[in-house]
Structure formats: C-alpha cells, structure tokens
Amino acid sequence: MTVAVLASLAAGVCFAVAGVLQQRAAAARPDEEAFSPRLLGRLARDRVWRYGIALAVLAYGFQSLALAFGPLSLVQPLIVTELVFAVPLSARLHRMRLGPREWFGTLAVAAGLALALASARPHGGRPGAAGTLSWLVVVGVTVALVGASLVVAGLLTGPWRASAVALAAGAVMGTQSVLLEATVEHLRHGPLAALGAWQSYALVVASVGGLLLIQSAFQQGPLAASMTVIDATEPVVAVAVGTAVFGEVVHSGWPVTAVTGAGLALVVAGIVSLDSSPLVAALHGGRREEGASGGAGGR
Image (tube, rainbow, N blue to C red; front, side, top):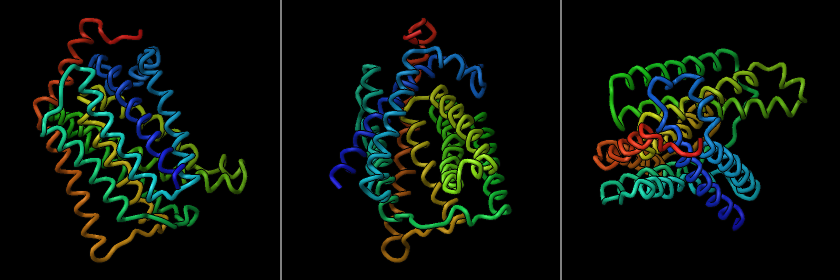
C-alpha cells in the first residue's frame, strides 16, 4: 500500500509539471491554430512541449505502478492532487501569487474530486458485455456533449472559454478510458481479436482528438481554468459510461451518495471560483504577451 501511495503522488507531481509545460507552449500559439491538426504539428517542434509529453508518459508509468499495488479507489483520488501542484506552479512561473480565492478554487476542485471518487468507489463491470446499441448511445452522447461544449466556447471569452473547451476534452478522454478498457478486454483473446474490434480504432481516434482538444483548451486560457475541468470531467464521464454500459457498480445509499454529491458540488464551486478570478485571467494574458514577443521558448 505504501508503494501505491508514493507512486500515486509521484504520478500527480509528474502530471502537474507536464500540464504546466504543455500549457506554457500551447498558450503561445496563435488562435487560428485552435482545433486544427496544425496546432499539434507546431507544438511537436517545441522542446518545452515535448518535455511535457515525456513527463506525462512517465506519470502514466507511475500510475500503472500504483495500480499494481493498490486499488483504483485509492490511486485515483491521490493522483488528482496534481492540481495542488500545477496551479501554484503555473502562477509561480508568471511571477504571481495565488490569493485566498484562487487557493480555495484549487483546493476545492482537488478535494471535491478526491471525495467523490473515494466515496463512489466504482468497481466490477464487464467491458465485453456491452452491445452495439449501448456503444452507439455512448458515442452519440459524447459527440453531442463535445459539439455543445465547443458551440458554447465560441460564445465565451477568457477562462470560461478555456473551461468550455476543456469540458469537451474531458468528455473525449473519459470515453477514451472506456474504449481502452474494452480494447484491453479484446486483447485478452489475442491480438487478432483486438485488431478486428472497432473499439481499437475508435481508441486511436479518441486519443488523437482528445490530445488536440486538451492542447486547444490550454491554448484558449489559463491552466487553472482548463486542467481543473479536464480532471473533473474525465473520471465522471468514465464512471458514468462504465456504470451504464459495462455494469460497473458505485457505492450508493446514505450517507455515501450525500458525500459524493458534496464532493461534486465542491468541484463546481472551485471551478466557478477560478474562472471568475481576475488573477487567473491575468495568468493567460501575461503568457499571450510573452508569445507575441517571441517568448514561447524552446523552439
């Protein structure tokens, strides 16, 4: 259990630094590259962004190690502590100091997520049991949510816009987690079974699309507005789909459901607090000015 805790915290730190580096590079890219494969192509040439991707890969390694020694209900809540590292680090790089409002928002999202995940404790389920109709519903709802989020993003500005794009990214990544689970299930029956399953190819599409949306969210606004929403949306979508399609079970009843609800309410309160913060908005504005003057770094 000690290995699981330490590996989870290491994953959280790596994810935090990875997010900061990726957002730092993406924020300097011009708006016309948003949602375009060209954005990923440009970022791939950025040394700082590549360092961020490498750290993300290392973080997934720590996460895998943690899951080998501990349950998901322990590992996932600990990993979301990345927000406690990422948001202050982002502010530090911009030579700004978080105030009570920003600390409340950051801690509320991290604590709320940990509380909701620890109380719900999703488990069980059979990925191979999902029928075609169930998958069509999942894909349809995901596409609708992503489309609606991007439409709303077009009507917003500043941190709110970044959060709307991040909502789309989190929805895709949550569905990607479910597709990964289904692909792993097919692999248990051999490589040919996985190659013959449409979920394997949908996983590739979701992974690339999710990466593009994440970088677009990083580009559109400050890290505090994007990473918090991605971290909140991804597990909620994954758990919702897993419960509805795979038959996963979440703990419910009094007082568990009340604790889960309180955790989710904390997440929402934290996101609203950060998105409405003038300091958080200024973080992205400062980075835009750096990018305009050639300060993106690493190219």
